[in-house]
Amino acid sequence: MDNSTPKTPKLLIVDDQPLIGRFTQGIVHNLRNRIQLILSYKCLATGEMTEEAVSPETTFAYIEKMVEAAWDMSQILDNLMYKSKMDHSLQLTSLNINDILKKELDFWQANLQFKHKVKKKYVLDEHIPLIPLVYTDISQILDNLIVNALDAMWDKEEQTLTIITRQDEDNLYIDVQDTGCGIAPENLSKVFDPFYTTKPLQGEEKQRNQPTGTGLGIYTCMQILKGFGGDIKVTSELNKGSIFTVIIPKQNHG
Image (cartoon, rainbow, N blue to C red; front, side):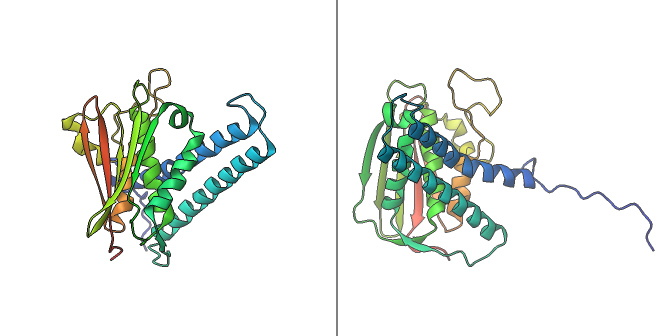
């Protein structure tokens, strides 16, 4: 009989971070964008942003947006549970990335910077085919890229967001381009590392209204895309802006 004192289990460490901590931060990061949009639509519905009376019809439309965002959060959590259990019953749906993009851009109308300060240019390939995808996977990728683009342009006089969908024989592509601060050449490879960010970390000192970051946005995009054989690339010029390109195979999910 072994009467020795049981050993305390050690936390699994990955990249100098406890794995449980990384997983938790990833969940929080994935949900934060939707929470912020829900709060923005709440302010619009109550007139807090404009201090003007809001019609019952408009209020109802904003409430519908909040419900949609809450439903998306529920789906994100469901998908995370499936993936954490390695459950292959997660159902794919034939989707058009243009339709997902249009819905996401509509959600972002609640963001005042996006709505009033950013010039938007959309060039969408009308012949994009339907392919099997998980809606919330693509919506999370788009949310993260839009957040990063807005944050990169937060103090710029010219703020232009350009989004392009295109295709070739094998892949679909989504280009998200900003006119923000850009990324130094020596840091380009780091943007895909977890917890790397060019923005101040949450809780750190920052300039007035400067956005903070966690370093999980692009990393999250990359991990989601790996799940169905996709990829993400970046090109950037310091003080001129960046282009993030999402690559989605037409024949995927092998």
